[in-house]
Amino acid sequence: MLILAVESSCDETAVSLVEDGRKLICDKILSQTDHAIYGGVVPEIASRRHIEAVGGLADLALEGIDKSKIDAVAATYAPGLIGAVLVGLNFAKSAAYSLGVPFIPVHHMRGHIAANYLAFPELEPPFAALVVSGGHSLIVDVRGYTDMEVIGTTRDDAAGECFDKVARVLGLGYPGGAALDALSKTGDDKKYPLPRAHAGDSPFDTSFSGLKTAVINLIHNSRQKGEELDEASLAASFAAAVSDALVPRAVEATKMLGYKKLAVCGGVAANSRIRSDLTRLCDGNGIEIFAPPLKLCGDNGAMIASQAYYEYMAGKRGGLDCNAYATMAINNG
Ligand code: KG4
Ligand code: ZN
Image: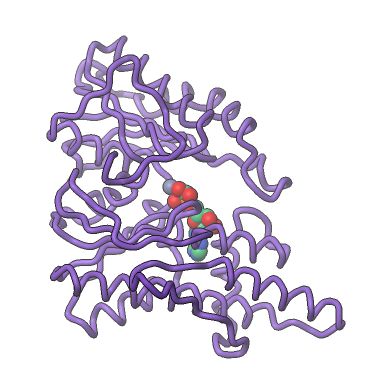
């Protein structure tokens, strides 16, 4: 079954084709660069760039493809920047209408989890997932392809948001997660002691706002005093603190659920410290770790097409009146 999917929930426009949920035919992505000077995504600019890009990307994705072979069209319908989501959603609904095939609405975070189905053909639910992106930090019980429940979340900022804020204060541009990761590789991760938060009543919930404030205060204080800051070591100490907040919780959650498989996904899943800590701790606990290649961690259309296949199999269809939603729990997706 061939599915054409559109992703436009934030600042990546993507159009992709995937066969039977697992075989990537093509993934055309345009990452918007306009937001860097503002230090964050400007929603209206994002929507306008999606409008400009989506048609051309669809042309590229469909080059040499017999359109009559497309069985369904999918798009992210939640969660995301509402104006941005609407662009891809409406384009996909129109494409489905003109091709005379079903439309499948897909929850963006379910899509991130599905990136693992593309990377690992043998992976099947149930498993635990650590879903870490610019807007979410979730530990999810993936009971089935379309049956999942959040068992841990951040109480405040998402991990990616925290990476981006720290990177911005260090002048690394936006989004700065990858640059901060690169900088951390030459640093000493024990040089700057940073806080590790505990959400007392829930073992799997996290909190990043205290860590973010601690790092930003540390940078400002050292600048005010004219002290030299070892930025690489600060980046390494920060990455270690984020990883310490996420990795042991994800592994404990996997054990609590009685699973032997843990999948990581979302933009922050590209982080080298988090990936190496996950590998080490999973190995030590007899858990198999699934971490997709970096290009499938960040937003892409292939993950939406992959999840769409399983949504389709479960009977999900969207009408022409299907709307976009800025927020939506993953279990309701
Ligand atoms: O999943 P994603 O592409 O978009 C959302 O759905 O939010 O995630 C983007 C986030 C950004 O915060 C970005 O800085 C972060 O992923 N990111 C990283 C790395 N690469 C991307 N964070 C830490 N280390 C990285 N290597
Ligand atoms: Zn995302």
